[in-house]
Image (cartoon, rainbow over all chains, first blue to last red):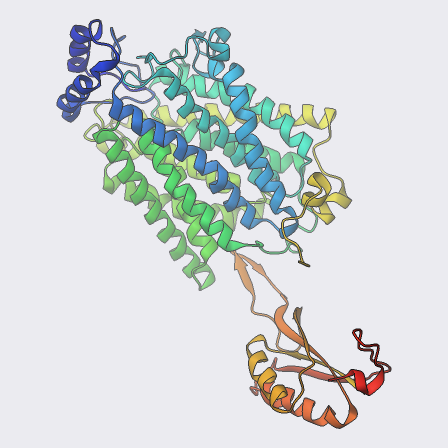
Length: 464
Length: 113
């Protein structure tokens, strides 16, 4: 992901063999000298194979912190955001699903997931299993992906992305899917949908990476991918009992606000961390992320005011999440002005989809996982094709508004490939799980609430 | 003996309790309840989906009194809860067959108060 700068490489060549772990100060100095011209490339062919990799302590520290920030997005960020939006009888089922995924995908990633996604390429489609059990993944940097941090740290950073992606889908089947079916679906989906897609976009030799699609931090792999899977889940599972007019409102909006705020906070790790270095590009991605989020939240609020005469809390936090989603692929390629445009578009497009289009279509995506992550992700990927500029990131490309319409077409193709592959595979996996376990909780369980029927617990006691 | 059930606006509860205390009526049970009447609810909007016909938050008071305290209790609740707006609530006065103080086993009017 992060191409090494040639000057750093030269210094690395001279110093690399002789100096080992004790060269951190050296490497820092070299990086600092190289920084102004440093060009980190995401999802674009790496410059050239690096000769000797030197761990940079600043970069490593930032990516370690970012890794923890991205875990925070899922637990408790997304868990509280979704948990607050369901009815009180299902709050634990949501928290459980998010927490469970953090555990399940960790094991999957270590045992074979990382190898499938990032291991040595097989025909541009998938990694082979030679990195299973993290074989070849140690303290030595892998210059193909991140030349200045230990390979193991890069693997951990990517693990957190693999965790949050299936967790996003939870929003679509919330309040009605059997826990066992959820667990099996998530494991199969992570293996047969997430891992191949991550390979296509980020893995060495992956065909979308080779095609030149820009996806700074995972708009395609994470958000469009989870979004379309969410839509398919909602369609296959059917509506909740009583949808749309006989459902109670969100049971705890303050939870949802805390969750959305933690998502925003953690997203700095997701986006700025995707620079895989503590440098100017990370700062630029941080800025774009923050600005787009604020603008999208305001844009949703304005739409709320126009359509509903009031600004709403659920509206402003939904807009913020839509902005975070949309800026994800663009974060390292756009200026602050570009970020404002991406954010404004995200707030308006997602608002219109969730509040106008979805009711017309009539499917029940409980918490709008598709409306926010799918639609926001598609907008973000296309907007990257409009607003990307090499002035921000010389390793990126120019978009339509900077004289290069070709990028928009490449972005469109990447979106379509993701929609089709993830949509079809998600459908097949759902049908398999339905045949083996049954997807939906029994009607009686849905009425009582999954907290009690699936977990034998309740979120809130009434007496003592 | 009478059993008084009153449904009032939540923000009037303190005033009602003060007035009951002033009339030496201490026995009262309070619950949070949801309800509706002529006032109707304020429609809630979530992601532009309007939740119509929603119930409103109210407070329910239950007061057991001896006959000579009935008028005082009703007066206290009525005076404390009235704002003149639709939705101020209702007071129901029911006959009370028996009362027993659990600690001592006293029965009837001695058990109240």
